[in-house]
Image (cartoon, rainbow over all chains, first blue to last red; front, side):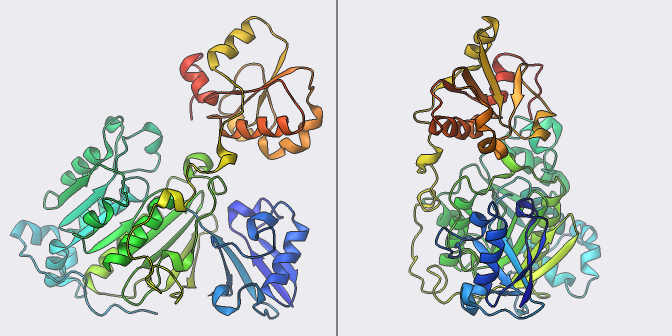
Length: 90
Length: 391
């Protein structure tokens, strides 16, 4: 399945830009593919064991993946995956 | 999508004829009208932080006629605040932010009562302070206070109008309403210290807190009046560079320890929860230091050593220490082979934290004669050469 992963500006510099095209059947497969292609980005997306962090939320289209099976959530062609890390500035 | 049904401000307070004239553009809006304005006058809103977000928030809430604005802040106005903290002025530099904001708000609208809390919000005082307000607006600048604010709001059943910013991007939502999600539903745990830089370290576009703070002010007023569709169950993402606004769906997590299972019945130690001060990697222990005066002496003696600046090129362009060579920390690992372990190496950055990491990397690679410049280029400017600009 062809999916686009969107990064915030702060992480985009660790990849080739804000939008990364990837292929896979699940959110976890997409994240693993992107992590392999961009090793410097990898530790900002998931922990050493490949699991999601509690301070980085992934949205599959407009839904939080935590309520769709986490990294096991199935993706479809054309889906958009958005990474929203916690920020605290004020 | 949640639709407001009942106003949070339940009391009405009479308006004087001066106030009726002042608020005329509100009074002719049927959605506000006389009773809405009377509600605003009777309402109490607590702002956590009188900084970037707190500035536009306080100004617009005061202008709108919110009767009591509580401000929690213990900082003093610094000249570097003025690029975005528009409630303070140049003549306020050095004054407590509370005093400065109070004067400005009183000038903006003398009918508004400002209550100041010149303290850090803590687990000991939060419930007592929050209890007296209808709504809390989170404009703080750190994770520990955000979790504290969230938990206090959930425990007391006070809506928490959330906003946070970093560089060019922001987030906003309304947490801790009766049926809505809370901050912990969005982020169950904070990132470890040091992973996400603060605005002081990473920078922030000055107008961004204006954008996000006015969104929070809008949400606060909507909640008080009970109009429109508040950001309950929605996370608004703001990208100022693309000027793109997106809303994501936020769900209440039934397992959330704050608003789901309610196992958090009292406030905890939030510094500990956020790992503040407990990370051994952040410790300066075992890192040899040189003071700026000692570095100056070393230079005057014409000692044979390398002075390495590990800041980024855009910081190098602002200010530099004579004789330094730029090797940004972001490329440091790849540059280790170019250093000579037979020579003394002094490493510096802006305040000393990044250069401490560089010293650790050098030590791990076997370098023995390595020092960190204590306090970085800022302390160098303070103690040795004031012509070096601070930033």
